[in-house]
Length: 188
Image (cartoon, rainbow, N blue to C red; front, side, top):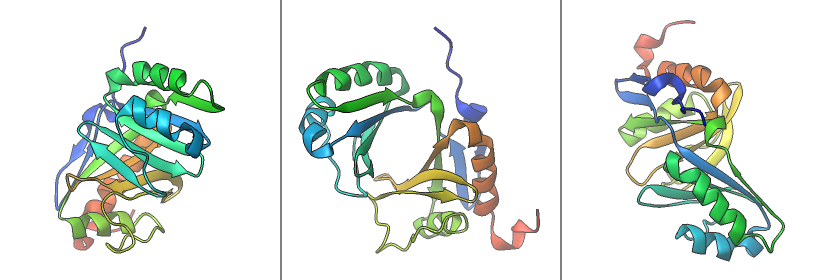
């Protein structure tokens, strides 16, 4: 077994919007007929199945709707493998895929005033981030400049961003640049 290393070793930039690498985060993807696997998943995770474009959070766990046939569970990194095994067993009677993707993804947390968080991400994504279109408890898969990612406004007021770990440095740089006030941005 290897010693897991967090992406970007907890890199952080403080300002009007603070950007921080969230460190090691457990992420388990579930693919299948959500109507069929929903009840076993809810029983195994203790979380209700989110509505379309929704994310439900309880304590240190969250369950997100990622597509019509995909859910993503966020949990503590050291719980992900066991949870994946539990979910595999819980969905064994259905056609489903359960995979621990924790080491393939990176998560960032943005903190600050909600308007500033929305403005920061609006510089990078075509997603509609107005409060009525993107309320707390909603997740969006989208583009972040040139790469794919997902974003949501968490219950604690932080904005969370996930991307592939292979582009974590790029996404961190994008977020830090977009978080700076307009007068400080300048040119690349």
